[in-house]
Length: 146
Image (cartoon, rainbow, N blue to C red; front, side, top):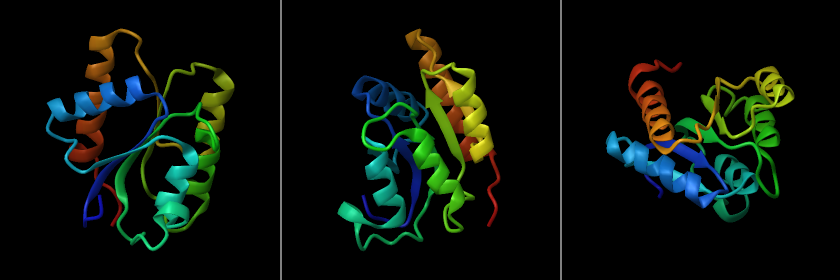
């Protein structure tokens, strides 16, 4: 999807979780401009216009990144670190959406500049509600810097 608006960049390797996330966002009519990438390496290539996404207009940035932590190739912590260390991407809101309740993961994410850390609810309806609320907040209520 190459257009002038990318609202949500979903970085999630678990296809079941990705499908549930997309379904929840579609129920709120906020998944029209969503891009799903399956690992951290793809996310970095997309954001920085390298690899498979070489030549992509990197001035078109997502309004929010939903980022899993436990992924192959490049994990979510490494992705978060690179996003927040780069002048062009550091203001993009990043929400970690993960199954990890581990205190060191939470601490490290906030040290790196995550905007929010959410543990994926196990129960289906709670998961759908959490993702719906998350999408509505970051896309409709939050006022990002210009």
